[in-house]
Length: 503
Image 1 (cartoon, one colour):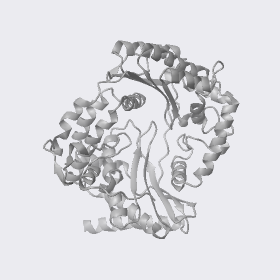
Image 2: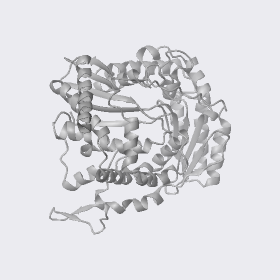
Image 3: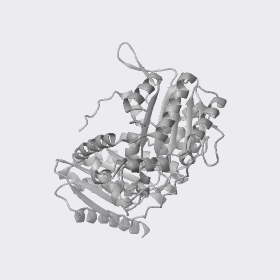
Image 4: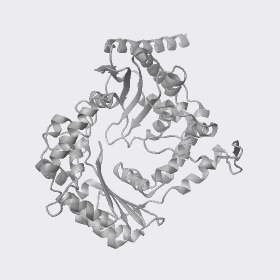
């Protein structure tokens, strides 16, 4: 287990205010809040401002995003940053692991394998030569496949004598990677080792089982890395076919950040589009089927600790309720010791070191889930408490003071989402990929401030469902029937309480 950190009072204050969501990272700027005197006592700085006024200057600090001219159906976003002589480029393709079975049944892991081997060699260059060339140019290439996205990132000096050759090399890899059998076999060997390590990680096992149970035959169901069986089906021919089908201009959006002006960024954008094969946009993903009732599954796991995951389908990234649910999640399980789950499971009862909830918002229906680990002897009772906490959260009116504190914390964390060129570029990639407006970052604080308690409550009622959960338990000496009975009792008690109130 992780050790509990001993924090000073002002650190606890900051920790309770600064939030970590799926989009915005944690901010810890204690120097602006407190200073320590020579005698060791804490003294408030004169510059300390009221928390109620901190949002006034956040909107202006968001980067100005330029929508560059691009071929029809393709987005190219640019932010100028003259602070460093660097340029960050991100090519985001609609080619994540959700496309794995596009070329054939059971080819899970093909997007991930393509990403891992994209810079492993071409007919003219070996992997070592490619790495050496990027190093000589002061450039770094990173390729990663996710469920929705296939992302290629290039960071390079803004000097044209470095920038242009690095971009050319990146485009050459996209079009001509050879995917040699030797490289494929090495990755397969590493995958086998990873699969063995996976069996020792109940949290990851539970997460994989949760996705499979909730998504069924949907393209999101299988892990991005694939399985031992599925990756053995992959061949260089299939990897090239995947690349030629999905790593094309019409299936991409582009993000550029750095020491360029708008004209230079426009020229760079056009150059990238022209050099890539044009291809076609990937077809829309199917909708996942909503589950009714409870689905409880046990993963036998012999250990003193059991891991619990609960969840159900959530929203697409394009849904207007996304921001309201991000706020709700902070109060339910995303805000450390101030969240409802942490208070009930850890602070009051000591069942776990940490209990957390999260939303993933994706092209197709995303996922809501909550997770924690606990000792086997208190597993059943902890599940009862976690489920009851979710029920209470859905049915209890939002506290206006807590909502205001949550929004303030999110506003304080917000600038970290564009604190560096790399983070700005990642934001641009997501904005382009999910079809968000180019002024999303500058409008975010206004949209967050505009949310009222009733907006959050309505979103919770529409999209959080304690009566239709999939529950995965990696543990022992417990049955799915025991857990399902407990969950139904919680709902029955809620119904009985509601009837009593009506009388």
